[in-house]
Length: 627
Image 1 (cartoon, rainbow, N blue to C red):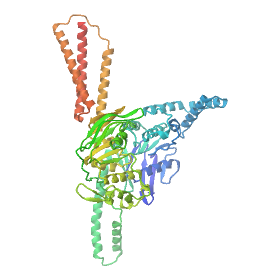
Image 2 (spheres, helix red, strand yellow):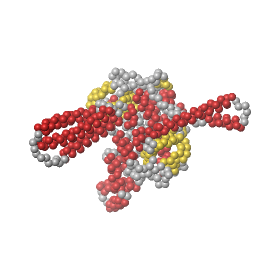
Image 3 (tube, rainbow, N blue to C red):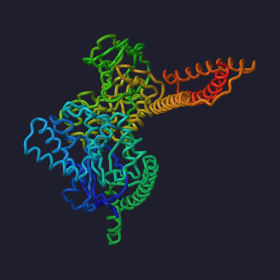
Image 4 (spheres, one colour):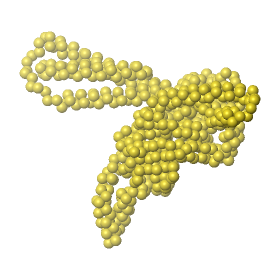
């Protein structure tokens, strides 16, 4: 039996219908992703489901006593609250008693009184009764995993990524039967995304979420809901299964549409000939024609085309020469040099706060380096797609805003597209051209930002978290565009799928301002880091076992001539093997190679470690005999 059911639910936004008479059920233990183009009503649906738990809705029913936690895209907080205050601002009895206990404890530290001592004793008993001490341990464990330790910081001073981490931690403090997440991976670094993945994999409660992270979808979800053309469709399985089933659905719809069109041609031909009599049968036939003509016809999604003609780059594109940048005592970029070449697709990796956006601001000369030089080519024109989109006049219409940046764009085939046609290619319907920007969803505004960016015809694109708020369809076509883009592309993104599709090399922030260059995709890099970590662990364990091993008593005797030669040979062979192992290790550290090279390096280091262990054991035996 479903724990939550929806029957004939509809929603609109102004004159725009988001979805109409949709119905579905959610079973206990389901892991569901809700997907669809920006502006189709995903966030609206999640919000309606969450609100219906506390306020009954005629179209939504749920299991009595269902405990649901909901995390919106933008967490709500008081900027003046400390992190510790915010974390225990929940409405659960345990959170309430912990908050009161710590307030009372702070009061006692400032000065004791009989009333405070009595209150402290009462709260201590309540902490025991609710087993709040175990709850605090759970909270502490989650905070430690997320590296949230400076609990006295004010919420208003935190980055968007840190606010999201704190909101996620708070979600998992309490037990629940159902969790609703709206774009949980936005603004998170890869380490936190992988932490969330691990949490949700062992999460036994029901999950409903909106996310554009396709690796996340593939690893977590058992069902997919899609809002498409105001209807809701359900698919069994993960994201890969969804793609297969969706393609089949579209193929079936297209066949049905072709059949209807064939019937319609015949019926219209009959109608044009003029019926000889107005019998009841003929009137019914005419009514049928009217229904066919006025039906809600299937139209396959328009392909989003971004194949614009780029401005030519000069011989010199961009050179960074020993660039350094610090903020106070914190070194963000240390002695970094790089020469950008035509057609490079580079990803930037690093935790939140490492300095990735600072590097972009240095490249575009929004910031001046403390030392070094940023040398921009005379023909280089930057297009910067930042995290927050451009500043919009929310009263201005979509079309009026776009026309500020140009009236047309030239495609690769020489065809000139008007601003209205370009908007249509970005899935803006003609009916939305005169919609005030203030009525657009966050994703639709990001799409509008892309249109305006391309109208400026840049040849060096910088994308800072482009996947935030964009739907999967837009992301897929954007990926295809970036792959065919002739100019340079640099991408900061925590979307692993996006990075794997777009970039072929990385700049990795390693801490203390150091930036390493790595040739390969994100997955190549992640695999390399794992292999290297395993090799180091194996080597440490191997060395430890040799150091701690109690040698067997060895009978003292003189080595034979053959054994003396073997001992010398072993010393030479061990030296050669260690040298060869260091050479393979340097492959990882330099990043100079592709996935096959890294795989081979991993195998070779594993083989060499085994050979060294055997030769060390034999050498120790012979060396003991010779002493």
